[in-house]
Amino acid sequence: MKNSPLVSVIIATYKRSESLKSAISSIKQQVYENVEIIIVDDNASQVENDIVERIVESFETNLTVKYIRNEINQGSAETRNIGIRNASGDYITFLDDDDIYLPYKIENQIKHMLAEKSDYSITDIMLYNENDKLIEYRRRDYLKNYNSDELLKYHLMYHMTGTDSMMFERKYLIKIGCFPPINIGDEFHLMLNAIAGKGKFSYLPVCDLKAYIHYESEGLSSGDSKIKGENELYEYKKKYFSKISASERRYIRMRHYAVLAYAELRRKSNMRFFTYTTLSLLSSPLQCLKEFQRVVSK
Image 1 (tube, rainbow, N blue to C red):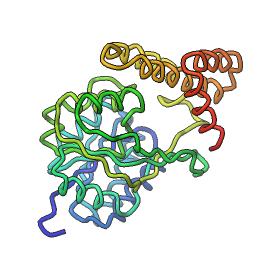
Image 2: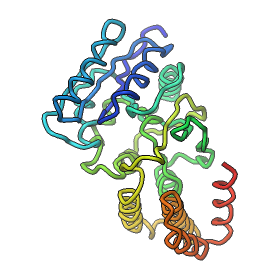
Image 3: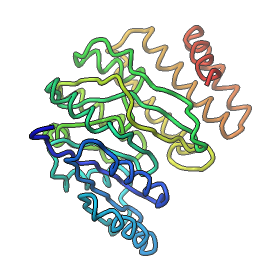
Image 4: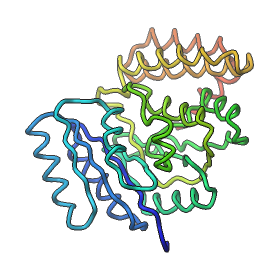
């Protein structure tokens, strides 16, 4: 692309040195060339810091890489914000340290945003398990109307999330305050703020990335942290229930209990799985059955 804008890719990393190599390699293989990588190391451990720094040094001859080391652990939200504050790009996107971009990810999304003159955008997303098996292709085909009221409804119901799939014009990201100071649900609240900011949104219905779900290891996306985070997020969503219909509220309630049921199934808590499944079914029977069929078909 002639006169192509600089795109900053921010990687927040914590105790994933092996997958970090693959993440950086996937940026190295991008067709789009005007890219800088900002790696923010949140390990706050000399041993882990040294490993990450060696990985960064191995790529520096081929890529523009900024390496930032947190002196104390800051958590995912603030770590990404540190990256944003140190970014030079006109546009900013993100890559989790255990995910990868496919070669056309940046080029396709930046071309799309320039053509649409949008302030922020999302793409589809492919979710893989730890054995590299595709478990879900998350299409955003529910996106029909881009006014802020409709976007809020879509987001409350379906979650327009996945940090890897997001790209922002830097000025707009700064305007909405970047990531909020929480570590569970921070990407949900970032999108919520982007919608509230009434910037121009656009959706690119392709997927050029692979995001990984870690079922076999404990972390923010599994176990007690997952349950706690989902419950807190559901309570927060209730603030917006007056803005949506009764059927939409029922769908959100159904989906909430379905997510909890699935989380309990993963950790083999059969009684809780049964309880949450029943609550999901009672909330919206038809939608619950559709959700169940979707999960079983994976």
